[in-house]
Amino acid sequence: IPIDRYRNFSIVAHVDHGKSTLSDRLLQLTGTIPINSDKQFLDRLEVERERGITIKAQTCTMIYNHKGEDYLLNLVDTPGHVDFRAEVSRSYASCRGALLIVDASQGVQAQTVANFYMAYAQDLKLIPVVNKIDLPHADIDRVLDQIEEMFELDRNDAIAISAKTGHNIEQILPAIIDRIPPPAGLKTDPLRCLLVDSWFDPYMGVILLVYVADGSLKKGDKVTSAFTRRRYDIKEAGIMHPDRTPTDALVAGQVGYISLGMKDSSEAHVGDTIMHITDIDKIEPLPGFEESKPMVFVGAYPAEGTDFKKMEESIERLVLNDRSVTMQKETSIALGQGWRLGFLGTLHASVFQERLSKEYGTSLLITKPTVPYKVLYKDGTEVIIDRPDKFPDLAVQKTKVKQLLEPMVDTMMTFPQEYIGNVISLCENGRGTQLESTYLNTGQVFLRYRMPLASLVNDFFGKLKGMTKGYASLDYEESGYDEAELQKLDLLVNGVAVDALSAVMHKSEVQAAGKEWTSKFKEFLGHELFEVIIQAAVGTKIVSRERIRAKRKDVLHKLHASDLSRRKKLLEKQKAGKKAMKEIGRVQIPHEAFEGFLANR
Ligand code: GTP
Image (cartoon, rainbow, N blue to C red):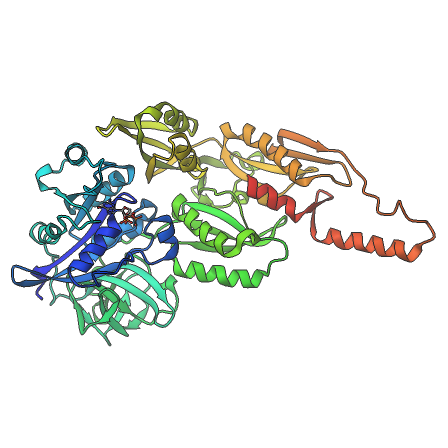
């Protein structure tokens, strides 16, 4: 099949608007999967199915006969959420068009808008598709109005379908062929191949999903990565149809997979260019290589009595499968050895946490999420605060610090109009600035706020859902760094800071957080043998204070003084019991106190 009969496209949609159902329909229509397969083919990971979201891009090639000629159609699946921005934009880079799906009963939602902006920025030809027209409250006209107003797309270009019943499905592929241009690129040029995605296969090692922009490749070719400069032999090449199907070659315009015998996903960088070794100094890599940076961090610590090595191995396995998670060892005086995990965004973090807690239950403690603050020093150095203990001691270093900065996001929300008052207060309390508020003809509002990422990681979505009876949708994009008055709040036990419990936050939040911390920690600490003072402090300034009175637990008082051996035994037992505790400020703190405090913070 010649390149002018290739079409590479993806599907842009809000969660639940029917992307997977439509994909499955298209695969069935082209005979790529059997008609009666009721499993959603493209959503393979279990957690994804449970949460109804697509995390990893999965791609599929179809062959379709149109007016007597065979076409090679590549559906490049993209994660729906812009947390996975790097993956989304790499997937879009391999496409020249996309189906923009909108649910006929719900209309345009926050994610539709966020994903539209990204697709538009990459110059994709968009085909509007109104889905779920079989629903009784479907209102096609209303949605077409929105498509015209918000996206400036012609309503006459829209296709109204039901992915569920299959109604009008047959119009989709011809529209793709007629309206989306074929990929550019020449088979005879030197190879330039974009790394779109990668995953780990237990038998084959790392599999790379690639888009061949120029040239061609085949099994046995000697290639290299523009980024790492490592050399490889192509062990296998082929298309996803729907599973890996080896082919003789992959040529310009095609999307497929290659195996290079990589042992470790960390060698695979999304956006990297693969080229032939012989061309290495002759050609430029493809544009747009961008390493994804973690934007949300949590500390993870095994609970008391858990096998650290075993847990580390299995977390490493999870991380290996999602190369966007970063992992570093971390040691805390209070909690012992653990890890600092970095995620692309709040959704990414919560999906991964869910996987962890499914696997480990309460045996893994997860600290509250933090964001990468930045310190700019006067000497020009810049430090990313990915953990609270990297925050400068302002009492000592104040004169050296030029600026404290926090990451900002452009937040997009849609929800029914009646909740606008509450949502605006939520955003303003989160230190947001309004950018846009548009009343939609569906009775919904589209609201855009620029706000600190820190406000978003603090269960913002949970609160938003709570105050809109679950009707709100949310998406966001990174929006640079702003100067902010940041402080580090410490929890002190008898004057000594408990390292794992510190947090960096905006000045305006310190007072309330301090009060909450001390009263919570008191609750979980319970009674102690000595008097304990719990304080929350910024530097030397005490923000909040609680006191626990001494309550001597005298194990000996019932015994007769002459019963010496018994007495010794009891004392030893008491000593052993104390070993499981951490001594901070000469106070023995049971591990459960930290566990309770962290779990409830
Ligand atoms: P993500 O994978 O999370 O992005 O969701 P999705 O957009 O892939 O949505 P999915 O295809 O999983 O569909 C969501 C729900 O809508 C499912 O319960 C589908 O059965 C249902 N659905 C999809 N298309 C239609 C349709 O045309 N009509 C009706 N009535 N329901 C549909």
